[in-house]
Amino acid sequence: MAQTQQGVYIGRQVTINGTNVNYWYGIPYAQQPVGNLRWMPPRDLAISNGTKDANIPNSCPQIYSFGVLRTEACLTLNVHAPKNANNLPVYVWIHGGGFYIGFGAQYDATPFVSTSIINSVPVVVVTINYRLGLLGFLADEALYGERTGINNRSTTGNYGILDQIMALDWIKKNIAGFGGNPEQITVGGESAGGITITILLTSPLVANGTFQRAIVQSGKCQLFESDMTTGQINSSPLSRDSLVGIAQLSSDMYTDYGHPCSQDNNNIFLICTNGTFQCPSRTFFQDSICRRQKSQGESCTSTIECRTDLNYSCLQFFKCGPLSVLEGETVAGYENGTAGNDSIGLDTPLSVYILSDNYFYVTDSNNARVQHYSLGSKIGSRVAGDGTVGSGASQLGKLAAGIYVNRKTQDLYIADNANQRVQLWPINATIGYTVFGSVSTGLNNIIGIRVDSLDNIYVSEYLKGRIVRWSSNTTNLTVVAGNGTSGSTAELLNSPRQIDLDASSQYLYIADYNNHRIQMWHISNNGSLTVGRGITVAGGNGAGPESSQLNYPRAVVVSYKNGAIYVSDSHNNRVQRWEMNASYGVTIAGSPSGQSGSSASLLFYPTGLALDPNETYLFVCDTGNNRVQRFRLI
Image (spheres, rainbow, N blue to C red):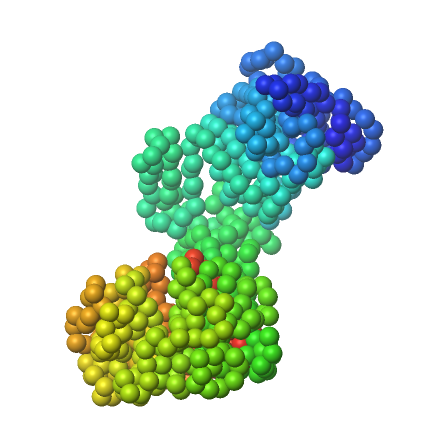
C-alpha cells in the first residue's frame, strides 16, 4: 500500500530473479479531461481519503488498442518499486510514439527495477500517460478561452505537455509514499518522449526542483530562440536525428510593437499587455526586433539585455547575473572587519592558498602564524608559527607574506619576510625548517612565493626589485626577472610583490607594485630565464582608478582555464579581471570607483588572491578589514 494526497493505493507484487517488486497501475494524477475539461489544461486533484485499488492500466485515445482500455479519462501513471523501498532515486519515463500513439504501461518497468536491486542500486520507476493526437495537441483559436501560464495568456494546444508537467508535480508531492526520494528525480524519454524532455528542460512552466536530472534518447532537439538575423539549421555531428535551429528574425515581424491591441488580436511574435503590443517574456526590444534576453554569464551592456524574470542585472563587469554575485562571503576573520588573535580573528591577512574545494590556508601576518580552515567554518587552526614574532624554528617574523602548499604532501612553504628565509612546515609539524635564506645568502625582503612542476622555488624580493629561483640541486640563487635595480623599463621591476605561475610553469606573472602594472616573464622548461624582459599584461598606464590603470597592485593569479588574470588593485580597493590581450580590466570584487568599506560588496586594501580548483570562486585577502572574502565568478 502507498499513501498519497488522494488516499491509499493498493498495488501488487511480483518476484523476478529472486527479487520482490511492487507495482501500481492506473493512479490518477489530475482531474480527467472529459466534458468541459476536454481541450483544457489539466487541473489538480482534490485532496481526499479512502483506499483504492491500483491494478488496471489504461491508455489515452489512439488508433491502436495495445490490449488495454482506451479512454479519455487517461491521465494516470504507474509506479514500480522494490519491496520495502525507502528514499530511493526515482526515474520517470515518458513514452514516445510521435505524440499520437503509446502509453505508460506499455513499458513494463518491473524487470528494470529487479535489475537495479540485483546491482545494489535500487530505484523507483514511474511511467505516465498524456493526451495524444488531436486531444493532446490541437491548436486552434476556437479553443482560446482559459487564461493560464506565462503573462496570463490564453492557451491552445500542447495539452499533452501540460499533462506531463502536472504528472511531475504529482510525483514530486507523492512519490515518498512509494519509497521514492522527491529530491532525486530523473526524467527520461525516447523519440517523442525525448523531444518533450528538451521542452521540460527549458519550459518556464516547470517549477524549480521538479526534477534534478534528465536523459534524452532519440528525438529531435529544436531550439528557436535567438537574436541572429540570419537563420540556419545545424545537424549534430553525433546524431543525424538531432537538429538545432536558429530562427531568422526581421523587423517585419515586429511592426505592431507599441501599437494598441486587444486580447483578441492575433500576433504570433508579440503579446498584448496593458492594451499595447509588447515583446514576449524573456525578450527585449532593440533595433526593431524582440531579441532574446541573456542568461547568467553572457556579455551585456545594459540590464534590459538580461533575464528580468530571474532578476538579473548587467553587472559591473558587463555580464548578466544576480546582484548577489557582487557580495562577498566572509570565510575567515570577523565580518565587521575587527582584528583578532583568537581562532576566528585575523590581523592583516596577506596571502591565501586553496588546497582543495574545502580547505584553504591564510597568512595571518601580524599574528605571526598561518591558519588552516575548512570551508563553512570560520574557526581556524594554527599550522605554522606559534603566534609570537621571532626567528626561532617554531616562529615566524612579522608580516610573513606568501604561502604555497604542495597538493600531494601538504607541505607548507612560507615567505618569512622579516627573517629573510623560506620556511618549510611539513603537515602536523610544530617547527619549520629553513629551505634557503638569510641575509648572508643575498635574500632580502621576500613576499611572493611559488613552486613549479620541477620543485623550483620562486620568490620575489621587493627591495631588490627582482625575482629569484632556488633549486634543490644548487646552493645559489638564480635571478629570473629584474636585475636588482629598480626601474620601469621592460627589463626592470620596482618593488615586486606576489607572483604566480601559469599551468605550464613557463610564464611567471609578477605584481610590479610601484610600476602599477602586471608583468609576464617567459621561463624555460628547466626554470631558467629565456627572455630578459617582461611583457605588460595589465596596467602600465600610471597609477589611477580608470579601467586601464592599476594603483599599487599587490597580487596576481592566473586562470588555468582561459589565461585571464585577477589582480588585487590594492589602493583602488578592488579586484580587476583582465582577459588575455585586453587593454582594460573589469571589476570583479569591490567598487569600480575605488570606494573602500567593510560591507559585503566593498573591500579595504585587498592583497592576496586565490582561485578555487574549479575556478568557481575567487578568494580575496581583504587586508584592511582583517578578513578573507569569497566571491562567486560567472
